[in-house]
Image (cartoon, rainbow, N blue to C red):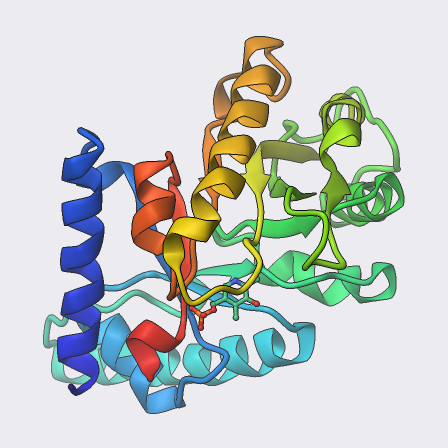
Length: 263
Ligand SMILES: *Cc1c(COP(=O)(O)O)cnc(C)c1O
């Protein structure tokens, strides 16, 4: 299969999983994880109308956004010269998601890259959340931590990464500590907690991931019931190439798929 076939197959599988769970296909966003992708493959997806991309490492995220933005800027200029209409976004208009583990000393470069509508998926400690809050406040031109006349809250969107499967993942907050951490993050002015994320342990059988995803969904419902994060708390980021169909059946709104698209 070529890139186009794989991309279509992932979208068809997503639609079938949504239908099986009696959910609207538009409820679920595909994040194309570009870890193994070539720049040309990313450009192809953008030309086909795709807008959400993910990287798991800060340096790669920086390189990708720079390369793709440079290309988008060139395309924009060409369009202006020829006055042609091609439905491509401008530079900075793709949604880049930071999906991998984030160290506190790498927060600064990540924030601007995720502000075009992307989300940081991997918040798993109070200290990391505080670091992002400080940086978000700084970017907004407001002194940390609060500024009554500052810009509206919620400009940096984040997900709490939960270590549901306990063994198998080094990262993520423990299930028992997630609710309290969500409450603490909810008090931070420049962070918008929009949901939860998890990774299922690797397995050849996607059904093995189902109880992990179901548990994250339960935790999600519990946090939502307590109105933590408010109306914007509505995302479940779960499911990768091996298990995204199961994740959608269990309520995923964001799936992070790399190799099934890019090979
Ligand atoms: C690499 C990665 C993915 C995508 O993995 P595939 O198996 O290639 O789909 C999803 N989420 C995270 C956090 C990753 O690091």
